[in-house]
Length: 195
Image (cartoon, rainbow, N blue to C red; front, side):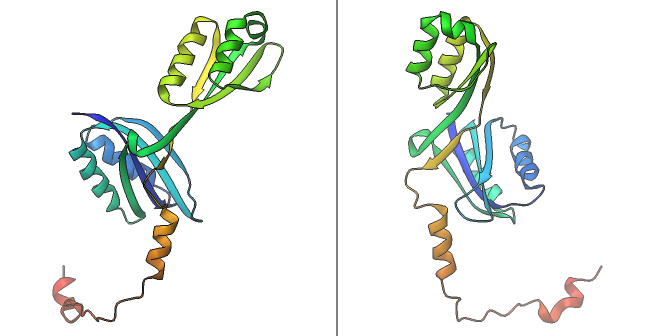
């Protein structure tokens, strides 16, 4: 059965990687519900957060495929119960409506919205929360004269994770192995590279 999964991908910041990852989804006819890219806690490493609705077996295969990209350091997938997540939303409402209608002010306060810009003709509020909360506030404000609305992509932190920074540090501290492995093709270059 399909369910919502959040895929977190740690990558080097290279041109074209986002496109190659997006193609992996479109080839499998998987719709991306939300996509966020940002720097991570490790300097030079970026984090992609992708939300999809799919069955777990397909998600496992997709994550393994993503990890085969050279620039990808690690990819994880999680259910909503395994992460802490939020989305940010901004609402533009008529300033007159906010001043005149107590219901609008009460709603905004109930959802923890705060004013970002206040002008004569409109006021912009921002709030963060889960999709359902943002959808509810959007629907109610729509009935009360919502002028404009925009939502960010999901940002998420994995519950059970020490953080990628710690895993990277552990990897860097590992000593190289002492066992020497011989490349079996070194003396067969003409056979391997002949056209």
